[in-house]
Structure formats: structure tokens, C-alpha cells
Image (cartoon, rainbow, N blue to C red; front, side, top):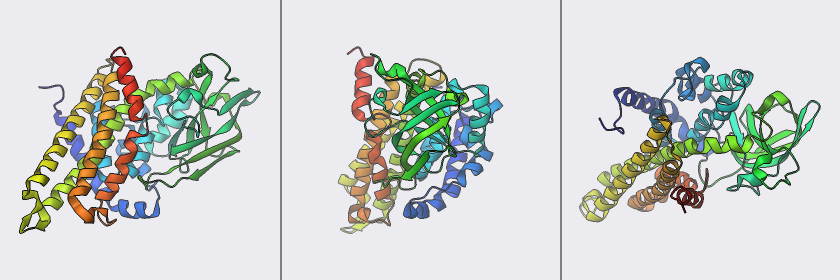
Length: 382
């Protein structure tokens, strides 16, 4: 058996997740997109089914799923709606992973376990108005005082910003004058009810049903027990979560591309011009063939990186390649899918325009395409 073949268990889970996504998430999409709202009721529903803790051990309420299954989970959710999937995926990854990997047992019981059950929604607040690709340049501060830390700062483009029960917030823990600025960053758990914490929603080009916003921290007092790791461990923690995150992001864009391809294939068989379905014309056939090739290549790259991740082998280069290729592939495939729809693709009643808009952010977040190329170049010795 090839390492990238799906096992019977993986195939069964793929079918179960697809069925759930189509039946439980699908009917919510149109209303959530129109109102720009996230269906928070999905969290407890998915928590009861074990979908929010796919990669976590049974002792914390997870299902202990392997990395390939986690990619399948992400792909299937995004095939139905990438906006809604964004909030769900974050709650299963960067919103909880730092706590699982570096947090105390108390932190795991107070935040990780409730998040896996769907009782608490998490958010990861790192990006700032002047600190995106260069994480080491964040300006939010956390000053030690007798009752914990006093945090001040502004975060932006934060998923689940206004609906989360707690946020993982990165902040500088000293003056920042050290030569290595990354050494002066801590990662803190900030509860929603913390005085001085406020959030506001942002309007976006795509991912309309995802809750994305700004976070303002004004003299927020956070107890010392909410510091993850040490005062200078924040940068290390965030970097350690990047590779796995890039693999899952790659799976996200495979899912979006799959949805766009399926819509284009269906439309091409139904749309008749010059006396026959447009799928019979070579120009359209070749587009669909190229889209198929692109998607399959991206999926294999994602699964390859996930396989290395699962085996505990180095996968920094493979993760960057998977994220880079899949996100750019999704832009190509959704663009061609819209082209196949012609003028109808430009109308809001056809979902292909949503796939096109949702795919565009892929080359911008979780490390731009340019950042991925820097990582790949470094990994090959340049």
C-alpha cells in the first residue's frame, strides 16, 4: 500500500465528515453569508461528535485522529463553506494547540477541554496593524505587576475575534530593546470578560461568514497562571505551530478548489451553446482537465507533508510547499471555474463567486506566498 493511500478508517471518516458538512453546515451557508454572521451553535453540536478535537488525545476529549484525517476534516468543511470552516478549524488548531503543547494541566482543563467539547470558542490574536509577516515586530506589551501582567495593544485580522470566550494574545514582556526582539515575546490567555478588552468586526472581500475583527487591549490585567510557558517563550511557541498550520491551510484550499471544480463541471454539462453542452468543447475540457491536475497535485503535496508530520519527521519545507502550491492553485482553479460559468458566475446567486472570493486570501494569510518561498529557499540551503 502506498503511504498516501487512504485507509478504510480514513475513508469512513471522510464520508462521515462530508455528510455532516453537507447536512448540518450546508443549509446555514446562504443566511450566514448574507448576514455576515457565524453560526456559533455549531460548536457544541460538533463538540459532541468529537469533531473539534480531531488531533487531541482521548484523555482531553479528543479523538486521537492522525494528521491525514485532520486534513480530510479541513478539506471537507471548506468544500461546503470556507468562511464557517475558518472559525471551526481555528478552534481545533492554533486556538488550542499552544495550550496543549506548552500549557499547564490547569490551563488544559480550563480552556482546552471546554474548547474540544464546544463549550468555549478560542481565538488567536497575533497579527497587528504594523506586524504581519514579521512576527518579531509586534508592539503589544505585557508588563509584570503584583497581580499578573498589564497588557496593552491592538490586534487585527483576528478570526473569532468577537465570538470567542478567550484569546491567545502575544505581547512583548520587556522593553524590546534586546538584539533578538523575538526573545521578548510572551503568549497569554485572555478571557473575554477581562476589563479593558474590546473587539469589533471587520468587513472583508471574502469569508463573509467567518468572524474576523480587531482586538483592543487597554490595561488588561491577566493573571500569571494564564501565561503559556515562560515570559520569553511566545515566539518559539508560535513558530512551533506554524508548520502544522501550513499543512492544514493547504487542505483548506484544496477543499475550496474542489467545490469550485464540482460547480464548474456540473454547470458545463448543463449549459448548452451552439447546440451542445459546453463541456463538449475542447476549450472547456482542457480547463477542467488542468483544474483536475492542479487539485490532485496540491492534495498529494498536502498529504505528503501530513504524513511526515504524523511520523514525527522534519516537514518544514514540505509544509511550506503544500501551503504555497495549494493556495495559489485555489486561485487558479476558482478563477477558471468562474470563467466557465461566464456571466452567470459573476452573479451572487451562483456559489462560484464565493469560492473565487474565499480563495483569494490564501496567498496572504498564515504566511504570504513570498514568505513561503523564503522558507523553501532557506530549507534548500539558500
